[in-house]
Length: 292
Image 1 (cartoon, one colour):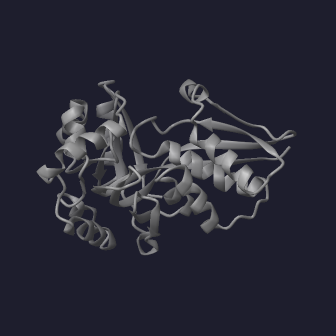
Image 2: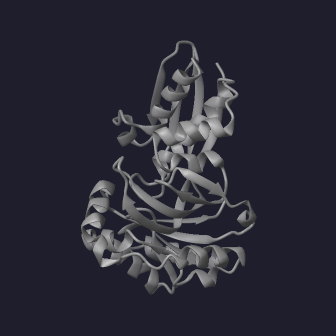
Image 3: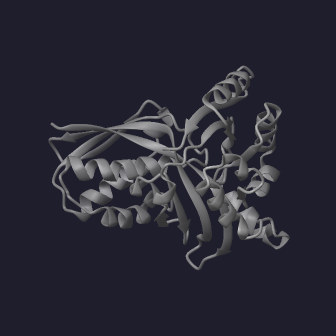
């Protein structure tokens, strides 16, 4: 048997504009992805038969037959007529249902890892196409880049290699709730006439602030058009933002459809101080992370 271990990183959305609902039921979006250091760990081991199995230290994943890592493995196996099987072990650190792409990241890491383990030799472009069939965020993780634009339903990814050296520090607050992404989008559809999104210039301003490597310029620029909708449905998101603000954090936003909220801070010392203080309340899961 052969074995490899790969990291499965989380993401944040530094900009998210939701557009029209498409004929396929998905929404057109424009987003700026950031890959961060918070990660799960996936161990892939070949099996003597052709079965795919998944286990995790998180019991919820062991019960989930829709696990995206399993979906990815089965799709790669079928597409390339692989005769081997694999045991997938997920050590979970990215909170489930947080808006940080944990499931999509697990799928991408599984595709990349099994491509090596099984010696499939599929190109990155081919893996990106497979990833798009699994989930909208999967292609971003397959690209293994720090920042990227995402369009279409998020699956059309343009890596921003010119920003690779820009490092942001985050404190991430996870309220102890589960958010239904379909419900959030349905509510957004009902309220879209209220023009909850900021002007399109926000995308350009976010990119320019990153290009200047000036995190302070991101305050008041980064935006998420789903945030007001999620906050109206889940007041815990507003309280998490207020908790970060009370610690002096100036740049705060929700990631994806939520409920995770992140703040951008200036130093590791500041991040550790904010995490230590908020962690004492035991109301939230609190994490520190950097761009990677």
